[in-house]
Amino acid sequence: MAAIVQDAVEKRFTSSRNKMGYVKDLAESSDLTSIPSKYTYFNTFNEEDGIEVVAEEEKIPIIDFSLLNSAIPDQRAKVIQELGKACQDWGFFMLINHDVPESLMERMFVACQDFFNQTEEVKLECAEEDVLAPIRYGTSFNPSVDKVFFWRDFLRVWVHPQFYSPPKPSGFSEIAMEYSQRTRQIVRELLKGISESLGLEKCYIDKEMEMESCFQVLVGNLYPACPQPELAMGLPPHSDSGLLTLLIQNQNGGLQVNHNGKWVNVHASPNTILVIERLSNGKYKSVLHRAIVNNKTARISLVVAHGPCPDKVVTPVPELIENEIYPALYPGMTYKEELHSRLSNRLAGKSHLDPVQFTDESA
Ligand SMILES: O=C(O)CCC(=O)C(=O)O
Ligand SMILES: [Fe+2]
Image (cartoon, rainbow, N blue to C red; front, side, top):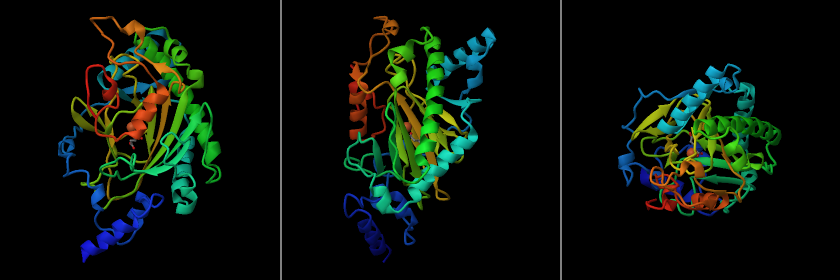
């Protein structure tokens, strides 16, 4: 009997493209006690990703943003050194004393929640199959190729150099614009510190990557409460594309970063995920991270990804290619090519840079 009910649930949520099975609807259906088989991530081919390999004791680096513009040279030098170390050892750090008002982050969470709370008809106006659509409401990662579906619905919007926004809910557009402006400023400041930590001119990355017209994408991820969190996955291990991603989450936990082969729970918010591997020729890490789900409450993460302008060819910084010491690890490709390749393939648990490395071939 239970199996018949479950079958009916699966059919209902997989019948057509537009009803491709958004997780929010599925999770809110009262007859759901177990997840449809297409969401079973663990116990299939991903056992090695096991949730048990979590290291709680690891200390995630914390960077004090306010010190990056300190008038005291020693303080500035120290924070730049810490930034470099965080990038090298973790590829990830938590940012404190940044100047994005907490009230703005709160409003952004509410606007995102309001988007997902709209009727399916309204949201489907933003449903797009094209992975590079400027406004895209979707589910999983890329349902046309995902072998296992992820327990996640998302809204992905281009916010710079051209600003797009879903027409509804009202107010979304203003909040998203303000939030993306503030986060862009933070990223440009961070990139200056990172430039210096690499031994380059302060504005080297900012200029080379033409950050004035940087490509910025805002993503709201919704992970509804899941009846079998031990089987499902929110987003599998991956590294982000671009230069830097800022991420905040509306509750403690859910995000995990990989450090020395172990999954580390990230409790604090807001956080910064650093993505700079190609640019620094592998000196800095593009951290693997994933989102797990829980059975108590829906979680939202707000991600702002920053890359150079879409036609910019991103190559390793020439100053960091010292032939035998640091041979070039990656071929150059435009940011658009990189994005397209990343978004149209499956997320298969490896760094998205792997397929284009000269020496390595994987997922
Ligand atoms: O929800 C999270 O914590 C992770 C989201 C993420 O990694 C992404 O959207 O790329
Ligand atoms: Fe990510």
